[in-house]
Image 1 (cartoon, rainbow, N blue to C red):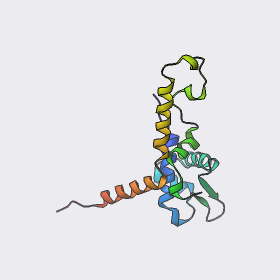
Image 2: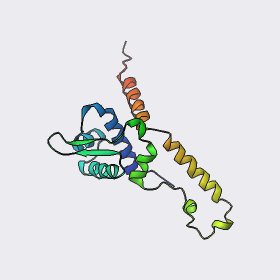
Image 3: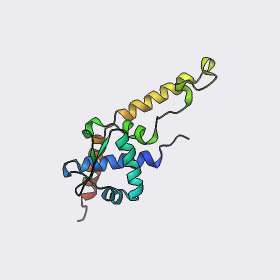
Image 4: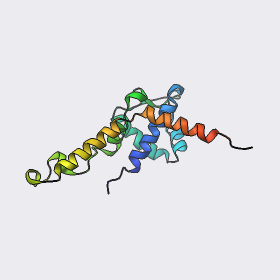
Length: 146
């Protein structure tokens, strides 16, 4: 079974957290870790990968921390996953790593499925996810007491 690991899932949540706090200035890794229920060390590992992917920026000093490197509308879920998971692939078929490429009947199916997966994740931005988070917070804030 292909599965997005905790790296990809937590990195996505970290990016949403940074998007929700985009106007607050740099956010410290400890704050992110606490909010997401992970260790500060794990948050740092993910932030380093996101920084290497060009998605976040680190700021040193007393008021240091992390910010998004681009607008949340410009950062896709695919770029977040690729930064933390590496290339997303269902099979090695697209990279021609199989000795049966020439006669494989199912190769085109796997390549198309992978293309659709890429398009799906590329069509979702961090801003879209932040909007979903805000909507969920508003639903939770509703009171149904009589």
